[in-house]
Image 1: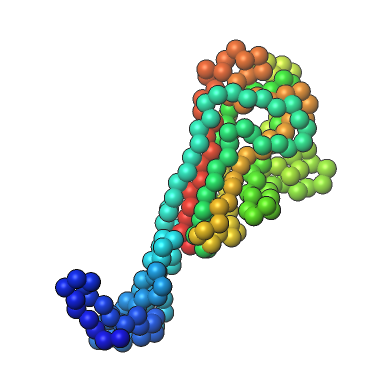
Image 2: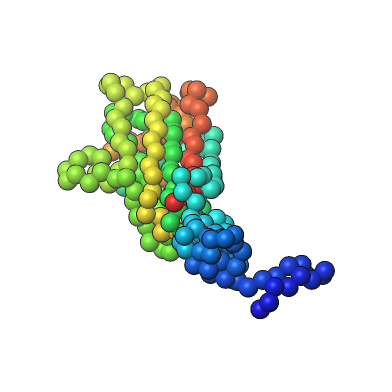
Length: 219
């Protein structure tokens, strides 16, 4: 295709390639080329960045592409010794290819007694669930958890405990079109664990928010 200047459709040129871009200066392997729904930028015949209909790829430096967050301000409780989803602490994200996801979670909880409470991160993609940043020591009370805590003292009533952690998921497996779900799960050794309140429910107003945040980080 020849170089075309049209008063209606504008300027058009050949697509070129990464090694021989169609728009360049005196350096014939450095410039801009095109593909279907894609603009490519290259230097020395190597693609350095691309803009597609899914966003920008190839940008280095850990740029934050997207931030999602949920803040649960109501209270809930759980009595199970096996892990279950924490109601309302779930987020869906559609990361680009090779992106990482930084996960942050802070919560305030109470418990009936000094039994240990545990939480963990679950990633669900295409029906497959993967647990992230979990302990795996055989016989350890916090096995398969991302974080475990014990209520101190002999009386756990009227006590609220604040904890937080973060984890960088470096093996997300995103492709720019597949939705991935991240959620928090919890369990308790015995009795009940409470989110956003103490065991009696009398001081929930001091508990603070329970926030779950995802940040997509460019490769």
